[in-house]
Length: 274
Length: 209
Image (tube, rainbow over all chains, first blue to last red; front, side, top):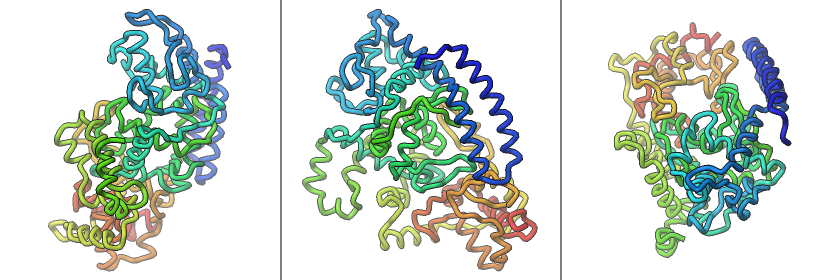
């Protein structure tokens, strides 16, 4: 799974060149399905040299590096399956944690570990979460990679989780703002696109799985790995709403709703997205 | 279980059954509480303009865009009453201006991550969801194709009026339509909507070639 960085970088350069020729190809194309096929091909090429591998490797290092006032590593962090048990943990998040009394996703749980185990301040733990190369980007990518091949399993059966599932569903359909948007505006019909960008239908499990198995993902347009929170907060920004607070319940509740619908899907993250 | 949910369950079985199979009042009350907490950073003006729901938004949210006949009728009536027309009475404007609006997808983003300058031109971004001129291949399909709209329907006064009203407030004709209420929400001006009407109906417009 660990691959030499230089090899990944070489493949990435080749993929970039392919991407440039693709852009020219797209400009000349007259047919939608042909365009989508080309984008699919581009994704496949990138998948062989996903730059997110670099983030994953950085996350692995960070995980095992003593940091913060406590000079502790994150190796005792409990992501839901017990301290230090990472295999498959991401695929079962968000879930309820008794020690914090909250339903938490991978990101909020990592911040809990960084503040309690390492003694970092909240500000230090979350620094630059919205930018490329943040500690959280690296850590989330590493942790998610440890669920590759695992099935998403978020039944939301505990009362606190069921509560967040109901909230997430209500939020998914909640319309407001100057364009009357909700998540459902773009994500409740099959086979739809905004311009040429396909938008998954989260009301079907196939649609929810196609998306949720890929995050965190390397975003070609951003030149960075985006976590699921980063992605959702940007959707909300594009809806012309104010930004919800990072790690807030609104974001986690939406994740519970989406992961619940995607349950059974096999994790492939980190993926590649436009 | 929160106290709110418990009380709602004890008192609200009857009303809950009125609001659909998906949790109803209690879930909505809880989610509104979560919205207030999670968007605590929004200013009062942002809250009013961007997060507070008018009746139509609240109803369409609650019924997952599939309102009962009664609710649907009330949404349509309210929408029809909301429509304002250009001062000069011209509902068929300049298709060239309408064409520009159809392509503009920026404007109106707020927040810290990637806000637009407040004076940035807002468009209708029609191409995000509709095919219009045949030569624009990068068109979305969330809404129906509008290619040859005017060629197929002509531009008689009642057609012009319908198209204007549909863009001004789509819910006047389809309650809980996914389409933004461009005029009602003040996103586009009546003059801009008339330009968009011309883009669809003017025989010279690329939509009708």
